[in-house]
Image (cartoon, rainbow, N blue to C red; front, side, top):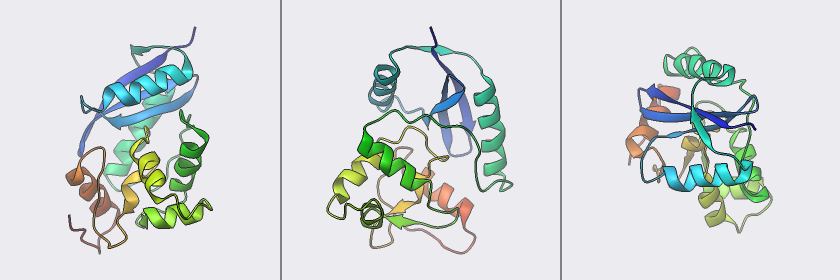
Length: 173
């Protein structure tokens, strides 16, 4: 039986839990105790398996690419991803992949891009449920007024990531 292999990654923005399943990354999420039960439970139910600590080729490659990202040597990732969510959530997460490094989008713009302009709140909810942070760049979603809005890793982590990606824009809370 395949299990979800997990390992902690110590990023400059905070600790993250990485998880791989069957050669794909299914988890790169902030290791915040209040967040773990919901995200981990959803992934475990979706894949019908449990978690075990360890390392895998996918986790090792992800660590290398995250290290490169945090030192501004990488702007895109080529890790195979496994989304564990509803059809709607997966549509939102796939659209997040289209927001280029250094750019941002609003929840409203995302809703329009998935051809569901009235689903702004549902898009925000799917964004908040993203279990593959940074690689699936939910941090690039900001309020329509240009301000930072909620982020699973906290607004300081979001600001750090956006500042890392842009030398010209200073984001306000």
